[in-house]
Amino acid sequence: MRLPGSAEFKATLIDDKAVLTDQDRKYVYIVDKDGKAQRRDITPGRLADGLRIVQKGLNPGDSVIVDGLQKVFMPGMPVNAKTVAMTSSATLN
Image (cartoon, rainbow, N blue to C red; front, side):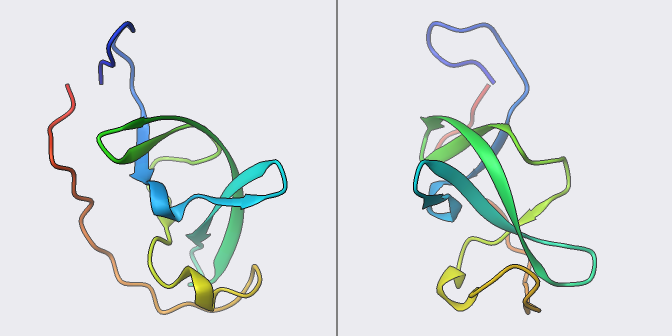
């Protein structure tokens, strides 16, 4: 990925609506190997074409919950997750 004014770098991108706030901390819910929601604190970066750059906190392959967040009341809840493709209106180089 290359943003204006920066060198090329690898980045994890997620839908910005998945990012939640708890006072001054940003976090997302991921689905663990047992199909349960787990909170993951993140360090978010800039927005790039509607997707949030995540600087720290996610690992390759993590499944981030984007829709239905209002149904996740606490970490450890079982979730019925469906994998969907991420969409973006532009290709990032």
